[in-house]
Length: 311
Image 1 (cartoon, rainbow, N blue to C red):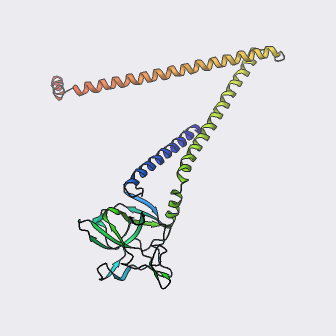
Image 2 (cartoon, rainbow, N blue to C red):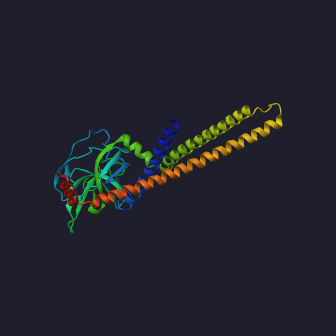
Image 3 (tube, rainbow, N blue to C red):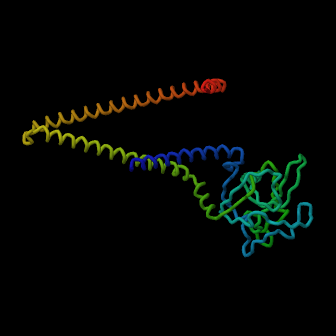
């Protein structure tokens, strides 16, 4: 039972390591075509690193942007879709989305060619470029963010459209579907430089330790079995235990006999295994032959045999 459990744990650990390596390779490959953001089955997972989408200090989270002026100077109102705010260090799940499916008010993640990094902001306007591709104008929910570069009355203050982001269609990474602070803490750990080495080395260490314990136990069991066999052989031989030379000689003989017996058993087991494999191959050949013969048998043959059986 213990041996079965040990094999099960080894298998699970091995599967975990292979799966982790597979995921790592898949995400590394996806980074090249996704502006450095790893993707898995069309979804990306990130941690928000700034307060640009956080709720402004001392304010409630509104569901709309009112009294905004668009890039053409017209007054507009934008209804927020998706997250109403994103606190710094929260975790987000991003869905790869077709540019035509993006709506005003949604939160998107895009690559900023100015910052040369991914940015997550809300879509305020959507327009078409001269080549008929989409252009998204975005803005962070927090006008008092530390990322703002504009100062008004000795205070940091961003405004739209003065501080808007112009996002070309090709820079779109995806739409933010979900966010959670605890998930953000997890992402902070997962994205740490030490996580992958530890996640790989820990299971390997566990497997190596359990294998070493099994080897020690097996060696002890084999030594005990040999000592028990030698003791039984000495008792059966009737040797005088006070005669040291006779005892040593009898022990050597008993150990040689035990080792020879074990070698014979091992050879017999190998031969049995060899025979079993040969029988399995022969069975597979016979089954293949039978299936081939059955395929050759036509429906007309069945009709002839049926007619022949009629009185």
